[in-house]
Length: 349
Image (cartoon, rainbow, N blue to C red):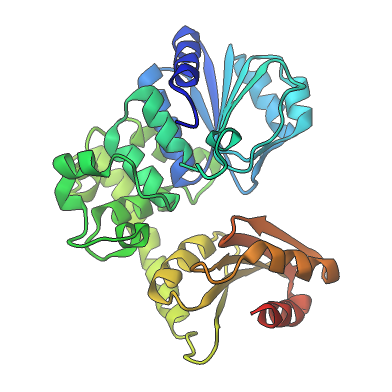
């Protein structure tokens, strides 16, 4: 185990001893299900979703000062601003699974990442939250699948919630996008409930902490489940319309599938690019939202092209930024420079 049982017990003990824990978590399905599991275990504390930025920035120091916690827990965030770590004197537990960082200069920070000991072990944060808290199992499975990892506890899940699995599945994409997958439906319900302001997002997260069974959501058997499903259904109409438009961008002889749309309120590029990759695995998927003169891309590859080196080459010539995982990245480019951006990507294929 890349994070040892001893380390997991250290986290558990610190959480047990805390009277006022403050959680900062990534506002995706992995980060959110990690928080919900630990919050349910502790039955106390406050959560703050960190939106639209991979980094816990210095602006969050104020949140620590406002809440006066005795323990800060950071979940599923690849980066934390040095100014934040310098300013916050409270003990910090940082649990993540992205590229490891060196926190040795901050003695009050305890950093846990499976890739420190085994770089091939990038099991999602929600997996480790489950190991610490004991569940709920269904949240850990949904959070792991959402982060493109076949859950380790899938066989146990099958015994309890077999009807939420698709009839046949070989890949995590089947769990996410097969039309008969309850896991995929739950991922979308959670993700779509996170696409809002911080205050509205936390209303949904608070409701999620009180859900006892996934069927409350999928079958809308309780007011709590109906609340989450209603918010999901509203956005699902918009998402499905965008997905149908995106499908028309498919061209048999083009190795790229490029789809852009305009929206000043909300990004669905990541959700769209993931599902398009499932539908068209032979394509390099490029989905962009046009906002304030910039195109904000989600790029996906089925494994035939590593995306970060291509972006690095593009941004030595162009004004923009981007990065991420080997086969899944985000990028931002000015609209005026987009034709050259696409050209550079084509040249790399």
